[in-house]
Image (cartoon, rainbow, N blue to C red; front, top):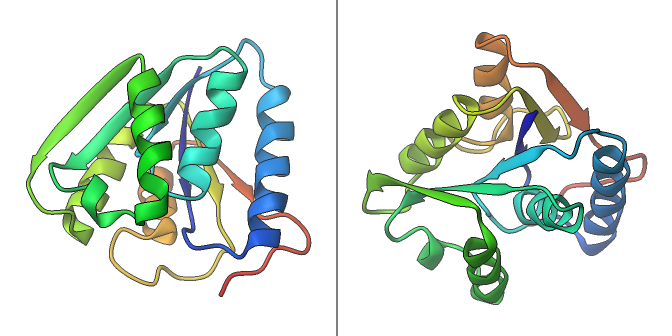
Length: 157
């Protein structure tokens, strides 16, 4: 099975803790261990990648743009670099700038390669093109099963 991930970035610390626990529990129950497909953004994307690797699964990464890493928070760069280095496969899209268009193209590429999508989503509209709600909608349009993860007590700024 190939699982993809989408989710809100910039979550408060307590929500990040709750999401980490929920992703761990969810992934621990899936057998055999799935292949994970992620863009490695800060937040749920990287938490998911860490958990896939913890379980011994393969991690496939889609890099939406040449300057993608530069658009991520500086304090996430070392995590991004480490996870990228551990990936079994890395696919780089032809975008130069890390824009909403590139991010959505990366998410579309992810959807083409998965059997199911995990969505760390508060079920609210996207705050920009290519946000979590847009990725969920695109998955549903492709008839890709979506599992929504939004733990009790989770909040979003």
